Amino acid sequence: IGTSASEDIIDVMVVHVEVRLKPIYDVDLADIRKRVAALLRENFTNWGEFDSWHHDPLLEKHVEKIRVADCEEREEKADPSIDPFDFIIYAYHTASQDDVEELMANEADGAGEESSQDDTMAATVLELPNASLDGSWEMLFYENQMKEKLLRYIYTTLIYSDAKVDTNIISWNRLLLLHGPPGTGKTSLCRALAHKLSIRLADRYSYGKLIEVNSHSLFSKWFSESGKLVQKMFSMIQEMASDPDAFIVVLIDEVESLTASRASASSGTEPSDAIRVVNALLTQLDKLKQRSNVLVVTTSNLSENIDSAFVDRADIKQYIGPPTADAIYQIFISCFLELVRVKLIDIGTTELPCDYYHDAKECAEGSIEKQLAYISEKAVGMSGRSLRRLPIIAHTKLQLLLNGPKLCVKQYFIMSLKVPI
Ligand code: ADP
Image 1: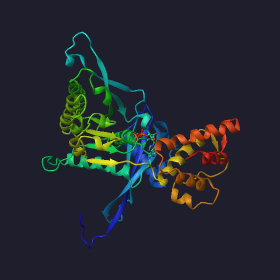
Image 2: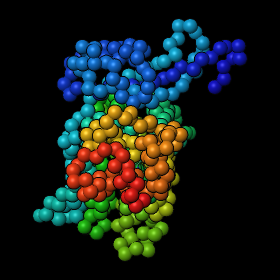
Image 3: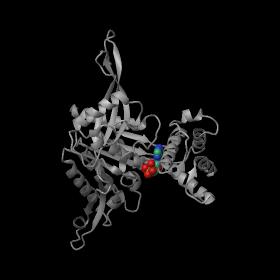
Image 4: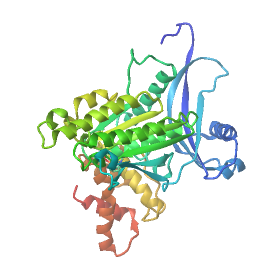
C-alpha cells in the first residue's frame, strides 16, 4: 500500500483494552468506553491489568477489571491533531461457568429401533464470553506472536466476508487445525481463542457459544449409523448458527478420531463406517462454511493420520510444540505469582520478579529471576502440562521437610531445583 513520498507518515499505536463488567450493570457502554479511554490517556504505562480507575465512581460501580491486552501499529498521515494512541475499548460481561448445555444426538430413529430411545451426548455448549475462560489467553505462552497471528487471521476472514469477496474466486473455510504433541496447550488455546474472539466481536454479535464436539460419542453402536449421527449433530449446530446475532465456535478435539484417513480406514475392521463419518464431516463442514458467524477449531496429536481432504480444508495448520526456555520462564512466573497471590509463597519485601527470560538471565547470581531462568533452561523439552504440575510436586516434597504449607521463596526454589527435570 503506497503513499506519496512527500507525505509525512506517523505510526499510531492501536491499543486493545478489555473491560470486564460486573454481572449486573445498568449503564450506557459508550460512557464506560469514554471514561476508560480518558483514564488510559492520562495513566497508561504498561500492558496487563490496569489499576488506576478505582477512584472513578461510575467505573467503580460497573467495572470488575480492566486489561490492556495488546497493540498494533497503524500508519497515518502526520497531523498535529492526531492522538498517537488509539485506545479500542471492548466492554463485556461473562456468563457463569455453570451455563453449560448438552447437545444430545438421538440414535433410535436412525437405527430403526422404535422401543429404545438411545441419547448420546454429542457436544457441550458453553456461553461466551465465559468466566471460566477469562484470563486463559494471557496464561498461554508461545513464540513468534503465534496467538496474535491466529487472532489476526479471524479478523481477516471477517474483513473478507464484510467486503463480500466472491468465495468462488478467493476461498476460505474458517477452519483451523492445531497439531502437535499432547500437553502443549492446543485445546486450551482453542477455548481461549473462542473466549477472546467473543469479547472482541461483541459489537457484531450479541452473544456467543462454544460448542465442544464429543468426537467419540459420534460413533454409533449401530453399525453404519455414525454418519447419520454426525449429520444430526451438525444440523443442531446449523440451527444455532442460523441466528445472525450469534457467534459460534465449534471445537473438535482430537479430530483424528473423526477424520481418520480414508485410505487407512479401508484396511480396518469396520471400514465403511469410518469412511461414512469422514464423508459426513466433510459435507457438513462445507455447508457450515457458508455461515460467516461460525469458526471451526480442531486439534490433533497425530496430524499424519488425518484424511488429506480434511487437512486441505484447514486455512491454517499450525504446529504447536513444547515451550521454549522463554515460554517456560513465563509459565513459571505465572505459577509463582499465583502462589504469591494465595500466600503460599511469602516473598517478604523482595520485589516481584521480572516478566522476561532475557532480562532474567542478566539478573544477579542467586536472585529469584536467575534461579527461575536456570530452571527454565533445564526444563526445555517438557510439555506445558508437566510444567504446570511442577510447583505442586516441589511443594509436596518441601512440605514433608518443613512440616507446614508456607514456603519462603528461597526454600521453594531450592526444592524446585531438586525436582528431577
Ligand atoms: P493439549 O490439548 O495440547 O493436549 P492442553 O490444552 O490440554 O494441551 O494443555 C494442558 C495444560 O498445559 C493446560 O493447563 C495449559 O494451560 C498448559 N500449557 C500447555 N502449553 C502451554 C504453554 N505454551 N503456555 C502455558 N501453558 C501451557
